[in-house]
Image (cartoon, rainbow, N blue to C red):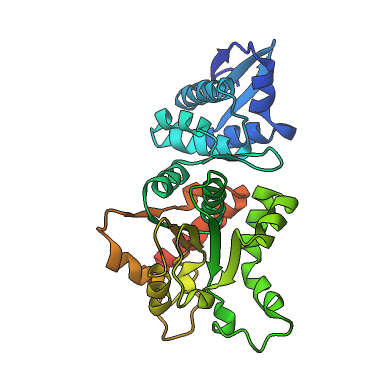
Length: 324
């Protein structure tokens, strides 16, 4: 260790040091492993040890993370990992955007805000466009952020209701043979949307909005023949909508409405011979100024760090398979 390059950083704020290390040193382990350095506390200061180039990167990272904490941002394994990734790509000026504006505060006082640059672009497109397509893998916050923006628009009286819909692929959009009443038949397909609403609004407000008809959750087939005015409309899992269903949905958008379509074109569950409406719509609607397309990637995954590795592994496998 004597031959290693060392850099000492004065640690005036112990709260920052605690956050830098994280619970059970989880943040520290990520930094040390990613940058191949050792960070230790020595006489109350932070000491970085390793090869010179890596140590200097670590110094930059700690400076950026210190500034995030000063701005009120808490350090988590997710934003520490993302900051390291931005730094390694030479985009350290983007790190401070992680302390972005809160877009909504849930019923439990949990602040919701974009956690990656991709998510930030997604929110900006939803705010500025009448129709936004959010396309990307699982865990990138496509649905959750869209539902958050819908709730925000409803609270701000920008719309009168929220309409959430999904294709019921496994039942071929015909739910009649399933046991129970309509609610029982539909619930399994719509549970993720209900879960997002429940988390954002809380149980009491969620039930109140549902009872008043301010929130409607229904399968895509039930949108046919309707005109949806003054609504915030979300089509989730859109990769499983056929071309005909996609056109039907998009032509439901009425006056004073905003729509968000989310999906993952690598997870199409349509039967053989059916073409995904989400893949088709990319070709048809590109170039219309009122429509935004945002492509999220594994870099925007905000679930467990393992999810990002899983998404990357599948992407590599699919790319290798296509090249054969």
